[in-house]
Image 1 (cartoon, rainbow, N blue to C red):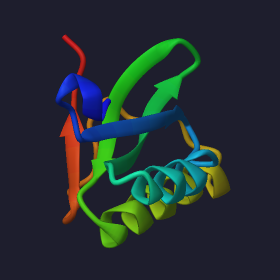
Image 2: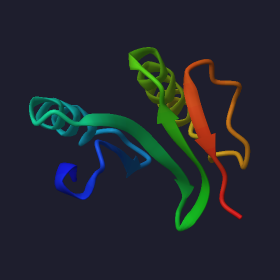
Image 3: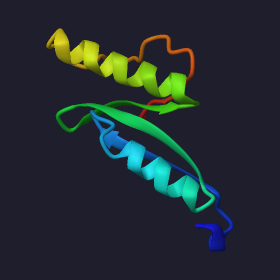
Length: 91
């Protein structure tokens, strides 16, 4: 990445964040600016992508996913009002 002129990357797992911590730890050790997020999907339907701005945003994303899981709810088409999260919607 650095050789190509890039210093920032994002990892967004589908409906979980299990790979994010190792990704960030290893990337920072290599001098990269790495962000974590999550693709919120109902089966194959992408609802939105949430990208944490910081650790608080990462917590927001995971708390929201946990709430949906605990309530056995489908993912809505619109994200909640996150404070520290960028949200990207598909066309």
